[in-house]
Image 1 (cartoon, rainbow, N blue to C red):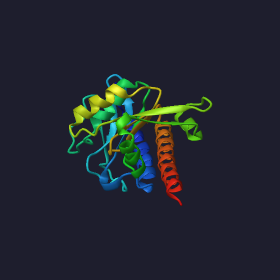
Image 2 (image 1 turned 90 degrees about the vertical axis):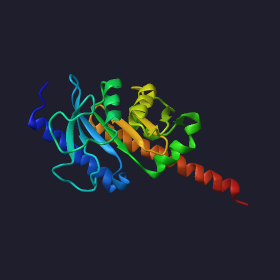
Image 3 (image 1 turned 180 degrees about the vertical axis):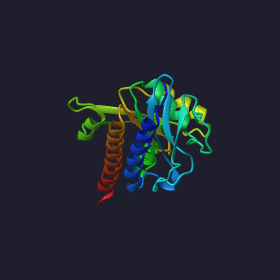
Image 4 (image 1 turned 135 degrees about the horizontal axis):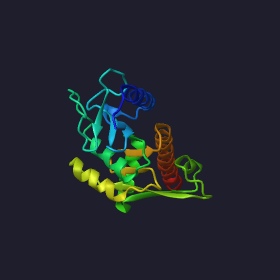
Length: 215
């Protein structure tokens, strides 16, 4: 499938919108994080953030298009994000995924560290679980957590083993979250829902501890 210039520019525009939304929330500290939007399934091609860019700003060289091996599809001086391989794994394992967003926040890092021993974080009965497309009454979700391997192929392999279509996200220990959806809007909604649930739970633990410690 040939990706047209119009398709490419549309994907870049939508990535701009997501990037600035998340940047306003301080979800990209120190140029961390990466975003992608899938352009085709066969062959797999997707637009992804370039490495080392300030995500609070816009420039003509913020994104490039890569293939399923995370290699640029045309000559460019830009380097794809170091974790582009993770996006490729998400798109291969979850064929319905059309966008994948990765951010680092205090709350998702806290949750990933607190619950790494269980290799998963579970929460039940919260209204924002509906934001993940799960509508059962008193629903419960379990988000997998993987080790923060420095070797990206090892990290991608670990993520490949635990992600499922039922829960659109995975935590990396002290390294943020990847969330995806069948559109960039859905991926954004999922990411926002996860972040609310993480912050709620972490604050609830703080309040419970304070109540126990009170005289």
